[in-house]
Image 1: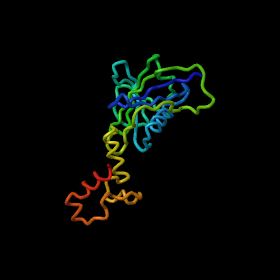
Image 2 (image 1 turned 60 degrees about the horizontal axis):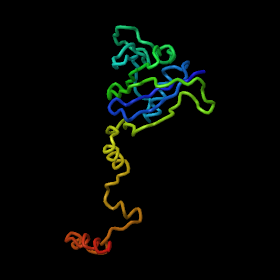
Image 3 (image 1 turned 90 degrees about the vertical axis):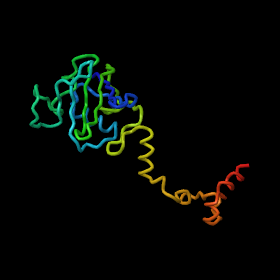
Image 4 (image 1 turned 45 degrees about the vertical axis):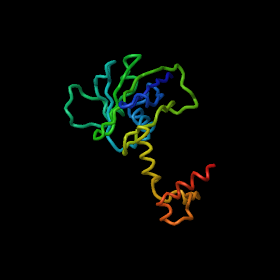
Length: 193
């Protein structure tokens, strides 16, 4: 059976993407779950796919579960819709939106078709990861923000962290009045030579 490979870009930074390999007879529900797993998001929120054209305009919707939203065309349901049913073009595109409150948007593009599936892979599967994934509940995943999140998570800015790891501060033997007077800085320069 052939395997389709989709590249799933984070809308806000195209250098952040995940490649997902999936069989044409698998459902959009399986695709949705594979995207969330690849980006390390939970499954607590609603999501939808839109068929798209080359200009990334939203077309027919493929929704997670029935709702009462008015639409021009009746949407498909993820668990009922096979990938093959929505792929009409060798460069087929979709827009995937997750968590409507935060509006996580991903551009999905078919980038390859393999003739044979691999017996070593359980499909759908994330076969490539590029860039730091955005943090679902924190600040967005830009490198600077990632460092901020890590500092918050592990409390790296907490005073005295060094001593817990067995590393002492230079000039520790001095009193606080000496530290305030700049002896720590002068002492550290002397130790380097």
